[in-house]
Image 1 (cartoon, rainbow, N blue to C red):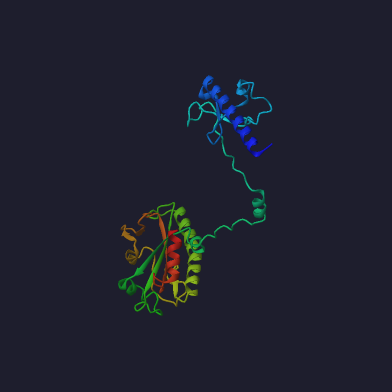
Image 2: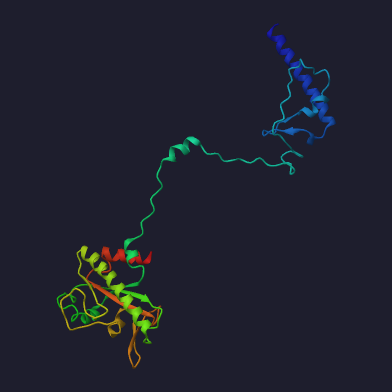
Length: 275
């Protein structure tokens, strides 16, 4: 059979198929046809029997299988009665195997300075000349007049009001003072490691903890605390210190250093408190 005859036969088969499909379209509504994802109509097996008998088994026209097709009531509209296909996410097993032995990411370590000061409300005060003059007697061996001085005030809110004396209030004060001493020792040690001088006031004696002996004292009810952001009030029978947030329910301890607020170590303390 020549190539021309083959082409002629194929055209005849195609023509018969087109005629048959047109006949079915005249008898069936558009909704009876199914569409693939491409939007091209095809006949499903339900309508295959309606084709003219002249399209016998020897025909080159083959029906497409109806696999997962959706019916469309009109072009471009999805049948509301059907279920829209869903895409199920899958995980590459090879990829999971590659990460199976990967150790978990280490947790970020808490800032050690934040942990150190976590029990106290800490403020940082740059001591002006007036404050430094008041420190001359406390630290006679330190050049407080010609060096920048910073005060680290560690305040702890109390359960008891410190204006009224009670056994419970005294016990609470002693516990907080002991806690302050332990923290202040570490703060002084850290600042000293960075090349600066530092010392703190012993809350029990009112004297510097490390510096040379002096008769001068600085208790928390001293009016000099007015220069450090607190309010010291004379209650006739006694004096009381008040915190801006805690009022008189507070115990205060102070560390002094010649490390300025713009120094790296003080900046680290400030950032730790803010975070």
